[in-house]
Image (cartoon, rainbow, N blue to C red; front, side, top):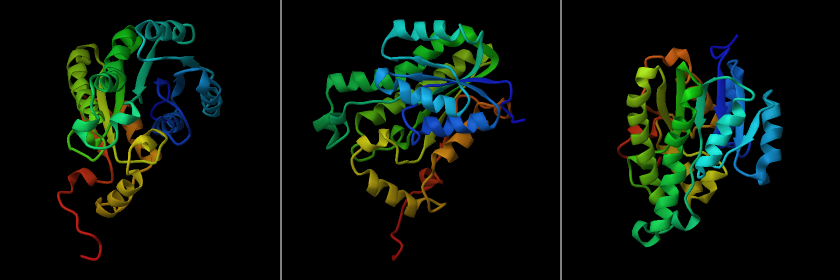
Length: 262
């Protein structure tokens, strides 16, 4: 029996077997959790259903986090399968491609700013607001951030602001939901070659740099993030809330990097 036996977990944002959401799903399943998944649209519906079946789940439901009616409908549909749940993993982020290249002030515009914050940050609180009536005492909410929330990075641009908003969301939600026995945390993962990361210019160079500069001298994997997520949403972390846990091989702790031949 794993340390998540008897727990029910919702995984949002699953898109492929290279995604962080998939690494988290596999880790939670390995520790005994029962899983439910969401898919954004019909284009990836069959893919998500097939992947959910691989981890023994028959629950995959539509969810467009930009639509409040669909968020409400998701929890209504979920209630036909589960009376309640314990864990919600928010693995959703998006900014238009033109917002993620070039200089910050050249790329940013009002619509891009709104979209990035709506999808990447507001959706976390929207899901918590709509689903908290179904969450068990002792439940856990988890989202995914990145170093760009606290450091300026080339081409990350408006997504850095959206992630900063998301991390503030974690703190305010933790304070609000704490009296209900619900914890809220985030993982700030190092760069990983996922489909979502493909939209960020210079990803290959970023991966190389981090593998050379990080104390562990490697990049992290979706399995690394999944294992950390399993801990944070479990009773083993019952005293942890409002935190951002870095899973980046220690890269965030480095102040200066010299190339190997220096």
